[in-house]
Every structure is written in structure tokens, then in C-alpha cells.
Length: 427
Image (spheres, rainbow, N blue to C red):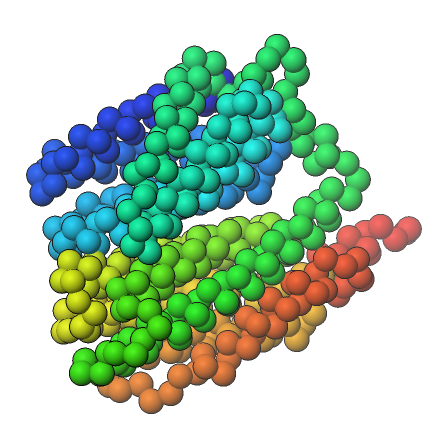
């Protein structure tokens, strides 16, 4: 599929998605409404995939960010429609605003990349950047209780209509008659380009793991776990209301799920030379875990929606049940996460760049997650939490990726490297 055809398809999907979601969201509880919202989610995900295919060779960072943002938006819009029936309008509104936050944050670098590629006039790209930034700000304000999201969403919504028409007319192509911006093909064939890409992937994975550690720690251990253990009679004295706290936790954990996807494919790029098929499997395992984790987070959204609709901060049985469901579904997803770490440990052991002790600790961390997750599913009480100790492997991997992976240093030779060296020796 050429860039022009891909862009025209994306433009048509932009316009169709507006109609599908607008009509579908007006028909809650009806099969036609559910079908239209599902169609909208499919169109939104397809837009992200088409833009990713077009932009990845030249601007891989922006392409990945836009793909994950659009995928998250598609998931949350569909989840919001389902939550409206099961948890009420409050949960549906939280899911919608979180979807708009994801769209806004992921689309700002996308518009900047389109301007650098000269696929959009600079004035239109500037409109997109400003419109999406306002959309994200309005969604964040709505999530914290300020009712300004509709006004701030207008510029971004108008941009998507104009952008959709423009794409439908000419696809992904230069805004003028000149040559398009650099595609990255020349750079990818330059000597040492593969090593440079690997170092960048390692840094991206390290930064992603660091951000995930901060966000997950604050959200889970700072908000979710204290609320899960809170006594219903002693809910006063909190720095934030329970409803706002759960919303912040859900948004932070959704960001962690998005980062999981980005880290998964950055690790795949970094470790692909140690075994491409296994690296691909490892990336898909972590991506699958991120999807299960996102499903778990919808239970936190439902809990926050119940508090919003009830107009109270009381942690009653319904809210507690939703938080318990979040933890149960998350534990199931950690099985995939454990498999991912085991595969990454094996790849790191085979890699010429990663020290053996780092690879071993990562594999031990994966085994710990597997033991805890499977143990939580058995009927008998599981007495220990192995991952509370073995998680250090993740921390070590993060630190090594940030500190050492970006440096040029000789590494341990793999069997493949040794074989090539022997073949190169004169007879």
C-alpha cells in the first residue's frame, strides 16, 4: 500500500469515526449503539496502524507514541460504553476523558513529525499541536473535577475534521510540490546504523522502565493498596478524596500499560540479534500483559465511577469488590509478564552486550512473577510472595540499560559470533 493510499484510508477513517462514535454514544444500551462504538474503536486503531506504517521509517518515536495512544483511545472508548451499563455514567465519563488525554498526548509528537516530514503545512501542524495540547489539558481538568473539557476540546476536534479531509484528498504526501522530508532509509543503511538503533532502543527501554517504576509505585502502593485496606469507618483525613485518588491511580496505571508496550518493543529491537523469533515472542507476551493490565484497570475506573455517581467517598462493598477484581485480573496478566522476563533473560544471556549476571537476575525475576501469579490461582493459601525479593532483577536491568547499554564496550561473544570468527580464520 502506497503512502497516498494509506493516508486516504486514514482520512476516511477519521471522518467515519466521528459519525460512528457520535451516533453510537447516543444509543446507550442498544445493540446498534454498541456496534457503532465498536466500529469507532476499530477505525481509531486502524488510523494509528496506518500512520505508524507511514511514519515509522523516518520518525519511529513519534510513530510508536501515536500507535499506542490511538490503541489506548480505542480501548477506553469501547470500555466506557461497557462501563456505562455495568458501573454507571461516572465510570463512562472517566474512561472517555482518559481516552481524550491519551489522544492529546500522543498526537502532539505526531503533528510535529508530520511538520518535519513536510506532510502538513506548518500552520496546520501548529494548529494540531495547539489543539491536541488543549484537548489533553481539558481532559486532565475534567478528570480532576474542573468542567472545562468541552471548550478546550473544540480546536482539536476541528483540526481532526480538517486533517481528515486533507488526507482523504491527497494522502500522506508533501504539503508542497517539493521533496518529502528525510525517510531514514539512507541513515538505516549507514555503517554502524544498527548499533546506533540498538543503543537508542536500550535507552528508550531504560527510561520507560524508570517512568513505570515511579508511576506504578505511586499509584499502586500510594493509592490503591491503602484504599483497599482502608476501614470504611475511618475514611477521613485523606489528602485527596477517594474518588479523585482512584482516578489519578487509574490514569497513572494506564500510562504504565502504555509504557509496557513501548518498552516491550524497545527491548525487542535491542535484543533481536540474540534471537529474532524469541525477541518477537517476548515483545508480544509483554504486549498481551499490557492488554490484560488495561482490562484490570477498568475495574479501578468503575470503582471511581461508583464513588462519583454516589456523591460520597465511602469505600463500600461495591467499591471494594471492584478493587479486588482489579488485583485478581492483574495477577492473571502477570503470568504473561513472567514469561516475558524469562525470555528477555534468555536473550540477554545470549547477547554479546549484556553481562551474564544481569541476564540471570532478569530470568530469576520472571520466575518469581510466575510463581506468585500461579500460586495466587490455586485454591490453597499461597504463603509467600517471591517477587517481593526477585523483582530486583527488573531494577538491575533498568539501571544497566540507563547507565551501561548506551556505551560502546566489548561484550561476551555468543556461539553465533564464535562461529563467524572461526569461519573468518584463514585455512
